[in-house]
Length: 356
Ligand code: NAD
Ligand code: TYD
Image (cartoon, rainbow, N blue to C red; front, side, top):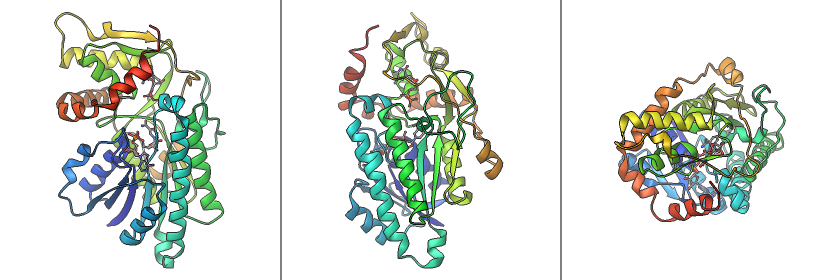
């Protein structure tokens, strides 16, 4: 079995990946996570007695700690999920994004290089550094333009996208210059269980359950390509095993939806699963001031990973969204924990200034 150092594994995608990796016995896992606001260790409570799972609280910027973990656990791979990941927060505080996404990724690459260089030839050939990135590095599409391919030029538009683009470039450099066996994945918007409710889908579910306004930026016609998180995790594992060193793989849901449609679908599911006697959930929809520099459309052409590795998304949007809403309804303890404290401050900061 592989041993993988996962960074950012107490966040949304990393935690789903670790849970799947342990269920399917893909790998032993060491999870290095700083435990920022976006993390929740309760998400991984089911693994607390698993001898092949270890959690370490720490920063990917802490070279001494990362060097120690690499020496101690001798991983066959590193999967870098750790990031500041929310566009709206990047508009308020870009520095945090540079520190973790750019400098942190660089520090991790540098520690990986030093570790990799002293491995035996056999272990060097087996080792992989997989960097988890986003479609947002490619910028924004008009409704007519073809979907992003791996060779689409980078054109990031938000501090978040720029920081991820910079990190992708450093990953490329560490392969090209130093020979580190890297892989990069650029994925579209994920949804599913365990996502922090600052992002559109869980925010809508939880606000709707509370009878609060459902904020739609602008006219609600911005388009995102939604992928169920488990499909993303399966794709990452496949790329780790079979991806060609130095290559990039675009991962997408083949599922472009306007934001307003997504929110309306969630409302319809809640009308069935948690009906209100005096109103329909869609009556809570509220158009608010747009996000500055709001990208119009993202779409991923995932024909490369389909052709080369045989991957395609398994979940369809209706059933994936239904399962997601059910998960939030059934996990009120998790929900209450992530909504306490700084989450309320964030809601005020991001929404109070947006005129209706
Ligand atoms: P998330 O915000 O839910 O979780 C990020 C995790 O990283 C948190 O647990 C946090 O504590 C940890 N972290 C932050 N800074 C750290 C640091 N300096 N050192 C160690 N840990 C740190 O993010 P997510 O949605 O799970 O995204 C994971 C990765 O996938 C990110 O790199 C993101 O750019 C990428 N991605 C996300 C999406 C999406 O739709 N969520 C889509 C494509 C790509
Ligand atoms: P988000 O989940 O923040 O992901 P990203 O910005 O990385 O795509 O937002 C998804 C879309 O939903 C995006 O077009 C912005 C929009 N949005 C709203 O309309 N209202 C909201 O309250 C949020 C958080 C997002």
